[in-house]
Amino acid sequence: MEPSRFKDLNLPFRILLGPGPSMVSPRVLRALAHPPVGYLDPEILAVMADLKELLRYTFKTENEFTIPISGTGTAGMETAIANFVEPGDRVLTAVNGFFGKRLADMASRYGAQVERLERPWGEIFTPEDFDAALKGGGYRLVTLVHGETSTGTVQTRVAEIAEVVHRHGALLVLDTVASLGGVPVDVDGWDVDICYSGSQKCLSAPPGLAPFTANARAMEVFGQRQSRVTNWYLDIQGLSQYWLEPHKYHHTGPINMFYALREALRLGAEEGIEARWKRHRSVAEALWAGLENLGLPPRVPEEYRMASLTTPQLPDGIDEAAIRRRLLDDYNIEIAGGFGPLAGQIWRIGLMGFSARRENVTLLLAALGELL
Ligand SMILES: *Cc1c(COP(=O)(O)O)cnc(C)c1O
Image (cartoon, rainbow, N blue to C red; front, side, top):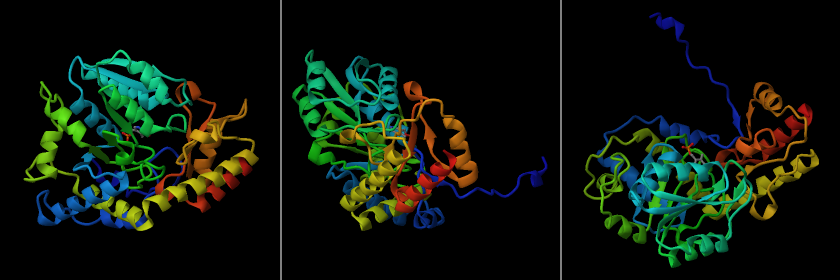
């Protein structure tokens, strides 16, 4: 072992315009650098109380069980599945992109009988789709992705879908990993039962926490479980013991990430959630207009195009990977390519949280203009 081989980190300052992580405010980075305290220190309990309140504000909910799960957005997804699915339960997963598929895979691993409601990548669902699919009855859970990061769509009419799901006696899980804090989300107004997100997309904290909320209807269903939750770490009963009274040890919270997410959410509250949605929308509109001028029109119709993630249609024969590489090497800008059925056909350009700024749009469009 020759320790001098390991040099100081010397990371470039990237302009992160991909599907996440997004850029992080200096205020959030400073919060992260505070010294850790114990996981039951009175000071951390106060930080946790703030986090719960700020998350309720951001989700637009009064739900008592509103906490950040340790882990990335996928940990939020797994919390939703592990706690609200029992072996043999029927689960309907709406699949119109990559993350819908992940939910279907996860539910089947927890022993659910999974039916897929499918739409081609790049389309969204209607309430009538759910009504028809749920006719057979007997479903425990329905999963839906709000902002599908693989395609750039945002699901509309969520309140009507929730109404249909409830009429058929099921619970609705909504994935807002790419949309919370950037695109309108209204958990109570839409009557969504279970909702989760990730810290590193429109909330603009580093990756590592998954905001999660569940309403009284979901908690009642949880209370009627016949079997124990097979995932120990993500069992919401155990997590409640730490996050709610009596604040008992469950697992060591990622304390510094609590500081960071609290600061990121505080920035969001200072801006105001509605103003934040408006900023994402107006910055996205500037990007869309500029992309049209470059001959790279957004692929998703405006009616259900996600403001926080745009997917321009690429011209035939373009070496899209080479252009992305030059954006990174010459301009320090990260954007992403498409994958699955959309590989090579689109880019994925994120304008999320602290990255959603007019100057980043101008810079990206100018760089693309030069490279094309
Ligand atoms: C990013 C993302 C996830 C997964 O989150 P990770 O933080 O990568 O674990 C899930 N769903 C959607 C819609 C996403 O955009």
